[in-house]
Length: 85
Length: 168
Image 1 (cartoon, chains in turn orange, green):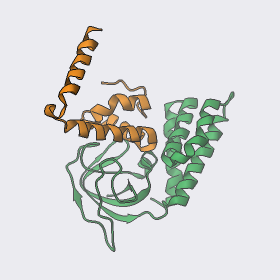
Image 2: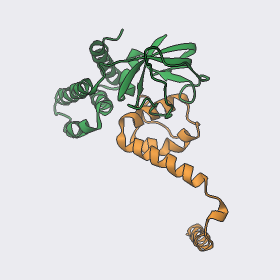
Image 3: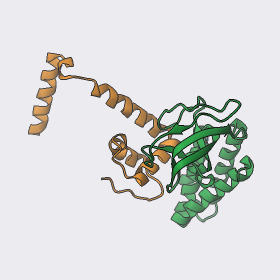
Image 4: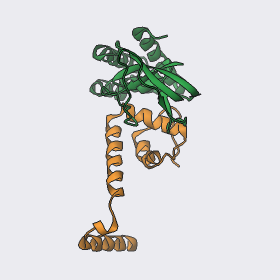
C-alpha cells in the first residue's frame, strides 16, 4: 500500500500509484476520499484516470484467441528476453 | 437532513456517472443505495465540505435513512435532489476562482522571501477552474504555516461560499 505524504491531500504521483487500488475498491475510505478530491481539481489526473478506466475496460475484453499468432510470438519472445536481462 | 451535491451540467455525478433525476416542479425521485463511504451510498457535502468538491452545478439534496459523517463528505442510504442553487453560476464560479487566486498571491507575498515558485503557478491555473485555485491557495497556506493553515484556508473558502450562496 502506498504511504501517503500528507493526510490532507495527495500528489499526482500518488494518484498514479493508487489508481489500480481505486478501481478495485481496495483503498481505505480516507485515501479514496483524497484520491477523488485530487481528480476533482486536477484536470491532468482526471484525464489519466479516465484513460486508465477505458484501457482496463478494453483490455478486460481481450481473450487469448483475440491475439494474432505473430503478435503472441513477439510478446512471448519479448517477455523471455526481458526475464533474461 | 439537508446537504449539497455538485453535479455535471447534464445532471450526472462526476465520479460514478450516475444520472440524477432533476427537480421539475417538485423534488427529484428518491435514490436508494447501501452506505459505504467512497464506494456506495448517496454522497453529499456539508457546507464545510463544499471547497473540496467544487463542480459545475450545485444542488440542495435531502438525505434520509442511515447517514454516515465522513471526514469531508456525508454518505446516506437515501437521497433526492430538492433544488438547484442557481447562484452557483458562471459569474460566481469565476469570482470564486479570482478570489482564490488573489488570496494565493497575497499568501505568497506575506513572507520574505516570497514563494515565487508557487506564485508562478497561480495565474496559469485559472483556466482549470475554481477547484484547482482553492487547492492552490490552501497548499500555499500549508507551505507557509503547516497543515493547520491548509484547513484554515479551506474554512475561509467555506465562509465565502456560505455568504455568497446564502447557505445556512
